[in-house]
Length: 236
Ligand SMILES: Nc1ncnc2c1ncn2[C@@H]1O[C@H](COP(=O)(O)OP(=O)(O)OP(=O)(O)O)[C@@H](O)[C@H]1O
Image (cartoon, rainbow, N blue to C red; front, top):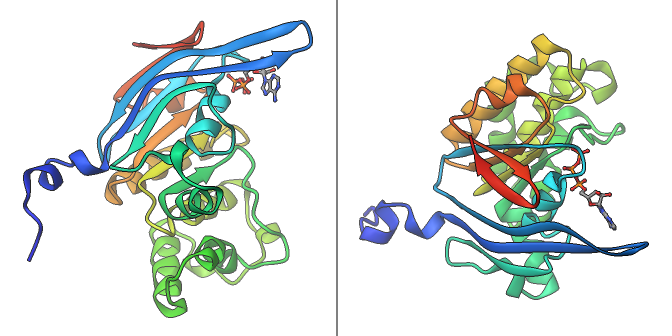
């Protein structure tokens, strides 16, 4: 029977809540305050884009949310989980099961086929191979790469590789999808195709998509837009 408790049906359990997040790096001439108290709340299926000047801290924010970099202070919650409080093994599990990453460079392994690349994140989970393969094939079909799944990445175009990277990020049904300049290496037309696919796939999978970019064309596709300036998010 479906769970219709108020918390679940309203999506409260799966929200991302970021409060008063700060980050200070130790620079050569003293502390460097990069994030000065970030607040952000997202619901399942929502997409948010963050733009801002180079060096503003956009990637830093994504790395902190993906547990690739520690925060200096502040709180994050994904559903009922406080990821900062987890043990290192539990953080690794959280990263592989609940977070998907898409980078500017696809980071596909050259020696593996497209299908094998998409399946890599499933190796760290208890999922059985047959169901993982079925899901990978469905995702690859969805992004138009069914015919290419047994090819090596080197035989694909830049846009095709990035579409495969999107499938890899989604393979474990992550709640949170972090995209760092996902169309930065693509020409305008290909970037538009990949950007649209990324948004529609994230929405279909009810993942929260948090994307940082310099591209105003990509940013325009998002209904919630923020600029990161002086360590704070300003909606526009
Ligand atoms: N490990 C580190 N130690 C010290 N300073 C760092 C470290 N990592 C990043 N920084 C600095 O933090 C600032 C923010 O970097 P970040 O990569 O988050 O910016 P960004 O907004 O993503 O920039 P871009 O748009 O150019 O990618 C930069 O000034 C960078 O030099």
